[in-house]
Length: 334
Image: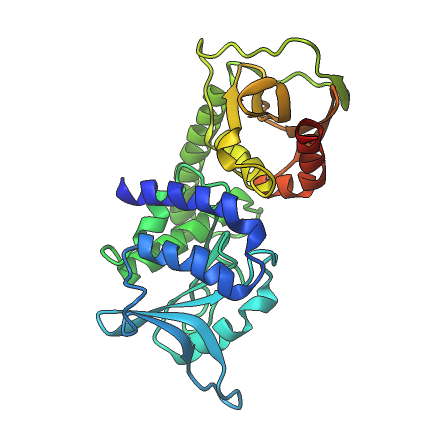
């Protein structure tokens, strides 16, 4: 799939440059515009991608959203951007709420260039929902994300199909936490189909995760570990480098790139862990990614030969380890 390939390239770019994109304009130029291009929109055509779109709303005059996308002359998508360092919150969507009610757009996107949140008016016509029906992280794309994202591409955009998909995704979310209560026959039938798809999707994801991690489930270990004289660097023999390991490597590489040439930072995978090395030398381990466990993932940082494992719930947590990573580089660079 061509879009999937473009998204993978954007994932790499995001990992390399996120920490440098501290302003909204930087995030828009380096991350958001390439994403729109990947979807097939002409970002240099002001009749298709309108920057700083203005639509006066009540007493609010001159307010703008960052982009409005027109498809075949019809306003279809509103986009509000924030700096990549900002954690998205509903308060950031205030302009989208107002514009949604006064324009023909039925899709709104709130993004910081890394996280993309998609909204529609599923619960009440012409009123943007409080919660997104779909969200993804460019730092950690899931296998199913490209299929959903492709619905918003220029060549495939169909608002009726998108709203139907939005309703399905919302119902799927509800079905995952359904509560006991009165349910009509129609709702029961709809939930039955949705639950069936949800369970099937859940099983597929779990099987894929188990296949990825079955070759080696990381054993619990104390926080401080002796690096030791030997590294289990037996390549091949069933070693699988996952997308998350590649994403984690790209983040460490981006942090290290401020101090050394990026091509000096090398990934080397093994059955036990994924090592990130300086100059492809396993005596110069910068960090280790312990991502094989199905429950908890760790990133190991080093002082001399002692490894400290840090639990991470999201790849972006690796940025918090920058000080330790840079200090480790300093041990080798002198």
